[in-house]
Amino acid sequence: MTTPHNAAVSFTSLLLISSLLLASSYLCASEAQSSPPIVNGLSWTFYQSSCPDLESIIQKQLKKVFKKDIGQAAGLLRLHFHDCFVLGCEGSVLLNAPDGGPSTEQNAPPNLSLRQQAFEIVEDLRRRVHKKCGRIVSCADILALAARDSVLLAGGPDYNIPLGRRDGLTFATEQVTLANLPAPFSNASVILDSLATNQNLDATDVVALSGGHTIGISNCGAFEGRLYPNQDSSMDKTLANNLKKVCPALNANGTVVMDIRTPNKFDNRYYVGLMNRQGLFTSDQDLYTDRRTRGIVTQFAINETLFFEKFVASMIKMSQLRVLTGRNGEIRARCSATNSNGKYLESVVKEVAEGFSELI
Image: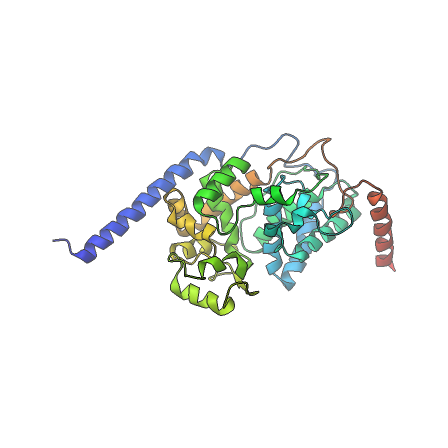
């Protein structure tokens, strides 16, 4: 005889099995894409002869940065995401307006919380690389490598990325930025539709790339709608109560970690949190609520190796979105400005002075 308790357990087991089977179909369907094709103009060995020390220069400096503040790893990873999703991985988010102030892309609401130090770190890396190799490496490539090393140095997988990107000549408008960066209060349907339409990313890509939220912090404004005026029923009550201590009302200025288990380590605990209704954003938690992505979340929560494998494939795919190569774009002399209107000469003079000061 089946008791109510046994019936509940059986139903839960069936639900989990169904989720895993659904996930398997998604993951098997995307298996052929586990090694994404390389865009024409990019190469795994692009700087092998012209700047053989490129990757070691970047990684060596980031080790020093992260030793002081591992939180900067999340800032660099997020900066790369926000660059690629708007105009493509061509460094537009790094550009200031012609008068030197923030661009309309940087001033767009989704980008206001980008860490200012992340921009400064990328510019510092650019200066070090150009000093060693000359102005042959783009800011877009430097940002892509910095994001890759942020994952690795925070405990995530080590992987190669194709290089050869060139820098864009303009930044995006606020409207274009908003249209291409799904909000944290978006549900899974909006996220899936937006990233499939605008970025050619499938469900596995969406869930894998969302795993970037396993490191980093967020401001109250990104999730306060789940707390006030009424608590979101899909949020764990203990988590909600803890969040209310940091964000006691609407428009509070507090910050919280996005992964309550291992906030500074790149691992699969983010997905464990989703299974326990501890996702911070609607866009996070709804990945476990939605039947199309629930099984993938479950697979990644169970198998960190699988998550790492799919994350790497999705990152390589994302890092090639609408890249500029060959004669398109330019190699910026300074990541925050294009080379037009005499800015290249100005930056060269400044760098010569900086280099001289380091010698004395």
